[in-house]
Length: 193
Ligand SMILES: [Zn+2]
Image (tube, rainbow, N blue to C red; front, side):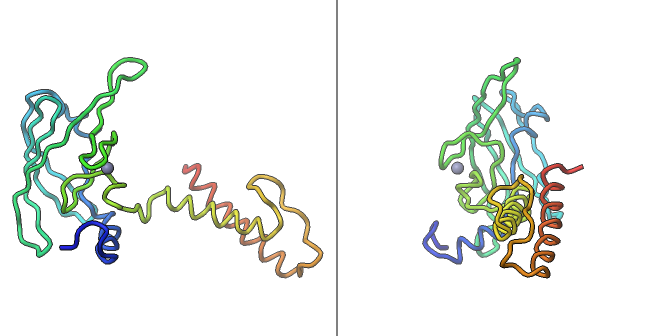
């Protein structure tokens, strides 16, 4: 298998799998009271395409030890064993928020993804949220900004000016309609109700 970053195809594959990637959310473990010293049990992890995997774990000395079956690059089933350190940050009104420490970058992270190299954070895994609200909102912002610039407005909030003299009415009206639609999409993403 190609090492990280050495082959474009490898990175593309990583990006493509994000929505179906297995992920582990430290908040969910906490809700299930799995992050108490000496706990050992197992849980079932589901992903987008309705497949699931059973993971055996123990939690000792702020370390989460995981055992599960995965498949290697050729699709063969392999036993995986990995440990993730958990750290806790005190909350201002009492209690604490647990975080995983990403084994690669050691950043405090809420969600880790299962990759062939183990459990790592989204940035390290180079995973992209292809259809999440964030990327949709980014795209909507870009579209609104571009349409407004064409109409001579440099920000997102000021009124759209009257038709510029050198622009045909048809072009102006079409731009206004497109802008209206784009803004509606943007506001619905920013305020989803
Ligand atoms: Zn990381």
